Length: 428
Image 1 (spheres, rainbow, N blue to C red):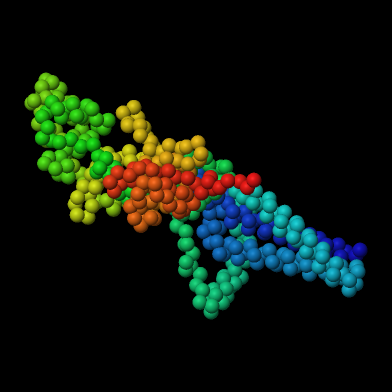
Image 2: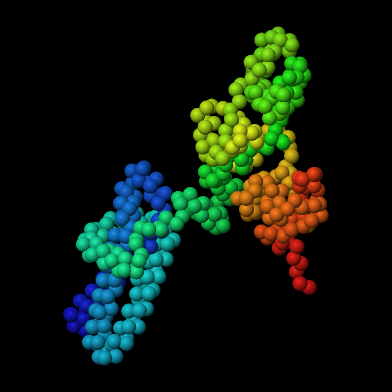
């Protein structure tokens, strides 16, 4: 072989190395974790800073890498064809096609991309500096290509930049958490906690409040000693006070304030003036988002609010604990009433109280029943059935069989829910 052929082979090898570099760099930079790079940059890592700078101009980065990669592959194919033509004559064209295709696919595409996809952050940090040089060198060509591409797309009515944010940052984060859970990187409890945190902006106070039919309230007209006994018998420290009718809330009585006043009165309950002890009631609209209500709780340094509808009627109450439970799950202490309301059965079905919130049931059973049109499981059945069903009626929707076990007046009190798959028997 002559010196020219050896030089040509060296040039082919250099082109393949360049193609290897460009292919791996593209995969590593696009697959690298933006969150990790951001954290490393804040910690003072110069490599992460260069990666973030490149990703900030993603179109220019991809354009520069593609131009460099295609130039390398084209040069490798041309030089290889010339070398093999000189050795094998016209048959060298066929040999060159086969050799270049195999070498480029294996060593310049699959191999570097496999390495990069398995170690994206490490590779991205390693190649950031040379890729930055390439992007800067090919900058004018990249700008020209971008302008040409945008012009062609504009002819077909497509404009870059429009409709790119199909998923919000919250949706992307939720998708990442779900993916990590399926792959085993995040346990269910952590997934539920992160999901609950992301859901705060989408949920309203009415979705988590304690309905007025379940509120524990106290009549302010009771004798002071009887009122003290009512407070001591309650599992709650804050109780709404009403006068005349239960809807007429005149304040909120805190058990600690009552005990302090009782101590100041020498233990004589008859000397207590309950309305002076009670705190002013705080009313919030039922449409307030949980994120806003959480901020309001923190700003006012209080944990308790009464929820009203658009007519000013009391619908229920919401506490800081109710919002926190949407993030961390059910919180129980030694004074809570232990009423789960969800009782799994040996046959795979679940007996559920009608008042159980759909979100709580989904979290407990790892189901995905919709909660857009109803808050409780009874409300979901009524919404889907378009009627108030009778005891014994059954319905199938969303992949589950719902059977009404008990009903009290117009309220569904107990249901049996069976996943449809669990009811199917294997063929004999």
